[in-house]
Length: 317
Image (cartoon, rainbow, N blue to C red; front, side):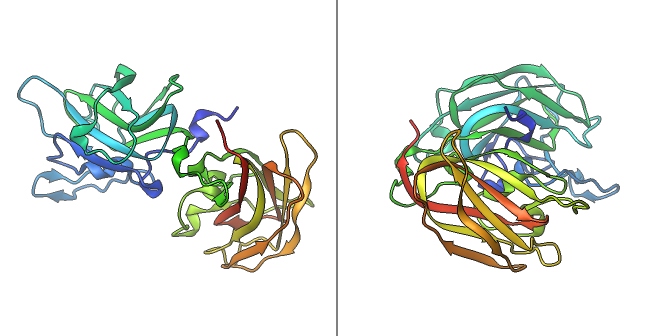
């Protein structure tokens, strides 16, 4: 079982997450909550409202109540853990926080969101700390609401979990079987020294090298690999291996194998030469449906994205 901290951040702006509403953002903008990357801080960077923080910060409350922000998840799914990061907020962090969540179809406005479920009860926070909370709820959610008591600053909100797609948009005759947003997941990989293998199957193109999957340099005779459980059983027809941004550190060759459940692995794409900084597309013919694929790169290096387009023969229930 994958440790929850290694699961993708469903709220990340890079995956389409958005802070759609906050009752107050006087000192620092709400959008910072879901920014990709770690929070940053520079001393003596003062604006018209005080020190500039890389986070969300509300004004000091002079009345009863608490502050809130609503985040639309970029990838709806099952939430396994939450990080409320108060990095660099020391005398101005909220002492307590809670989190609610809701599952909504279509495209509601913030005011139309009702039926919230508490997934993290009111809990104490520490300042300048990654406050981590494991979540045991197994339901699918599309939005989360961060409540801070009574006010203060939070640098980042990370919502780690497993993406669960809206099945209405899974087209059995043409889909990316390996897409994170369709429900595919990383089972294991040989190395994640520079970046997470979740990046390999993340939505959209990689904007920079750091948004792909990159391994450490090998000093032995082996090779690196990543094992993906597909979003649905299917027959691959086209495989895309994208080494964009990887120029002096792209793999020399790659191979893709497939298997059904715990069956034997068979080549879908045999050992094939790759080029640096290049999107490669390969038409393939799989003899049988598969539920998992394994990408081997030789000997090591980086890959921006892998796509496995094909026909789903059995959609997930």
